[in-house]
Amino acid sequence: MQGDRQVMGSDRLQVVMAQIDMLVGDIPGNAEKVLTAAHEAVEAHDADVVVFPELCLTGYPPEDLLLRPSLDTRIESALAMLAERAPEVTLIVGAPIRDQGGLFNSAVVIADGRIQTRYDKQKLPNYQVFDEKRYFAEGASPCIVEIRGVPVGLTVCEDIWSDGPVEQAAAAGARLVLNLNASPFDMAKQERRRAMLEHRARDNGISLAYVNLVGGQDELVFDGGSMVFDRSGVCAAEAPCFEEGLYPVTFVVEHHCQPVTQPLPEPISMEASVYDALVTGVRDYVNKNGFRSVVLGLSGGIDSAVTLAVAADALGPDRVHAVMMPFRYTAGISLEDAEAEARALDVRYDVFSIESMYDSFMETLAVPFEGTQPNTTEENLQARLRGVLLMSLSNKFGSLVVTTGNKSEMAVGYSTLYGDMAGGFDVLKDVPKTLVYQLARFRNTRSPVIPERVITRPPSAELAPDQKDEDSLPGYDVLDDILNRYIERDMSEEAIVADGFKREDVARVIRLVDINEYKRRQAPIGPRITERGFGKDRRYPITNGWKPGV
Image 1 (tube, rainbow, N blue to C red):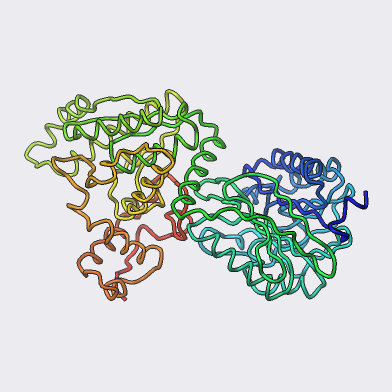
Image 2 (image 1 turned 180 degrees about the vertical axis):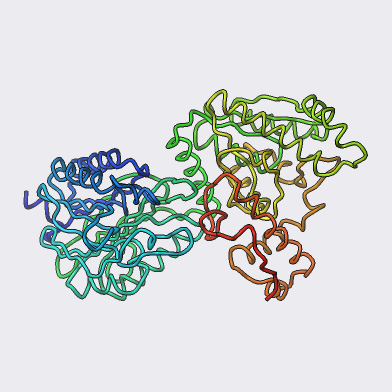
């Protein structure tokens, strides 16, 4: 057996990165998943140590479930089960642990039938989507555990982004640092992780294994992409993004703990990573919440076309129902393109006109509306009738209504409460309109499912004759640049104007963003793919007297 533990005459340490998808709150189910992974890691990969993501027993983020009175007993039972039933291997498991000092976000070491020790996370993030200081106390010291004679340091997520914890572990004699993560996706996140890990490994002269969660949890998407860096800052192994799995890495143990280099996955484009994040977010939200299928309104426009493609790719065509709900302003090409999209993706497709429903409502409202001119009231009624139809189908058949509004529209309120906003999950909520076009073209490279003229024709809500989005908004290229500066970069009106934008455009866009906060509070959640999504990232008061300016 000793020969099995050597690589070219040297001792080796077999580390398995368990990049897995957990269900928040299902502590017994998550523990069983850890146990299954541990057995597989030993049987298939001859593991010495299996490293799991941050807070894997609760799932991440558990939010106020951490305040439930039975949390501690449930965690104790799960850890006791793992200690009793785990194979002969060292497990590093993320869990919330309480002692006299408070509740800690911990990495728990299980081996030889018992809990050996634990490390408590020192750096608690409290920005963007994170609010760990609401729940956790800070750890204060490093933790070094010997695994097959190798001193291994433990850290948890934010610890590795900050100075201190890795340096402490290296100073305490660690030759390898294992880092447990629940790091959510955004468009440039993996590149930032690589740069950070390279710097941290090289500056401390220590190998690092970065193990990340994968899967969707409400608006957050976790992309995996677990990585190993050697002591000189070279990436030796990288797990694929958005794929669950057990990823083994062999470390040669001589003077140092050196990972054996593996072929790295091919880089993927920004569009591919965003598209896969949306697919992951939809699949997990629908499946984890127990929906049998989804239903959506298909308009013949680009937003609903991309939403339909994501839903079909996430769930399979047999679980997707597309409904076209035409009115007198619906163009013939919209009907043709909607049907072509549904046929290309092989989803169920129905057409239900809202004409008679609209006429009935207008007849009922004839007296109170007498003497008034048509305005957005009549336009919004069309959208609300469509929302009623979709919600009725949802109630009858247990389908989740997925909405199709994009981030640009959500920002400026170009949507109808209780109309096109009616539903449970907005696939494109954090996707700017200009990126929607890029995603459409990307999806067509996998197989052509979106007609070219859907991508090239001017976007329209088709709620009035000859209506175009840009009749009432700046062009989307200009709009998205202004929105990026105001929403994601917190730039002031004056600063945005100084970047070369027309003052009237900037002032109008900012006003629309500010006065439509009340709508966004009532909108469904959707997958977060930027660093500043509408939701946990951006918490503005609805009622406020703040005036734009410097």
